[in-house]
Length: 91
Image (cartoon, rainbow, N blue to C red; front, side):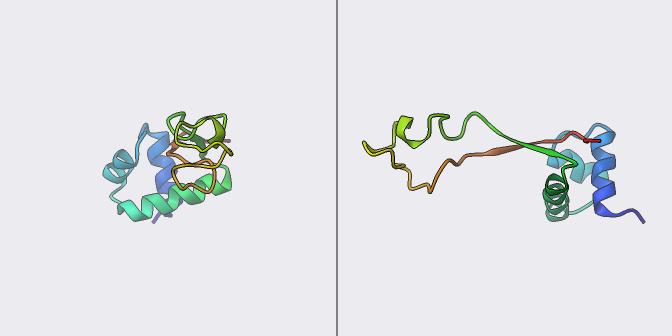
């Protein structure tokens, strides 16, 4: 039996490009795929990149919801936003 990490890497190597595709092709539960992806990112085998649709690059002071002192108006403790996990196998 192959480990979930190897199974997820194999699915990505075979062309899976989303969590749903990995779940469908491996038969692993979604939470196991999520845990494997998070672990592979920490190991440097997958790369995580921030989407540009999150907080502005200028920080809270350039955000329309920010206040005059550069504090977030949204209640965030700092830059936040969705994260895209680029599902590509690294060497």
